[in-house]
Image (cartoon, rainbow, N blue to C red; front, side):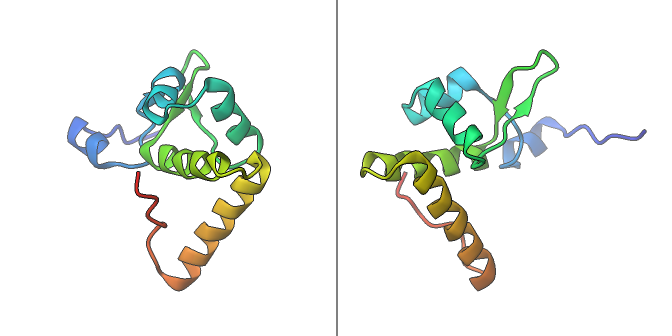
Length: 104
């Protein structure tokens, strides 16, 4: 099986490369690890797993988690926030608009 292993420069530019551990992702977003697990449970993000089974997050997933945090901070329940973000993504896909700018 011929698998492509990205070069270091490719990893820097790849928003989907799972570069962040759960602890680092939580620190960057200023959220708790259980919050990240709740987003996974709600189906908003699905982190990749390291060979040891640890969660690894990409920049794209962190952007979605950041948007969820913004909505939750405004009083939206986590499951509703996840649904809103999914609908925003679908709308952006259908209108060829970029992902909503959250200002973060």
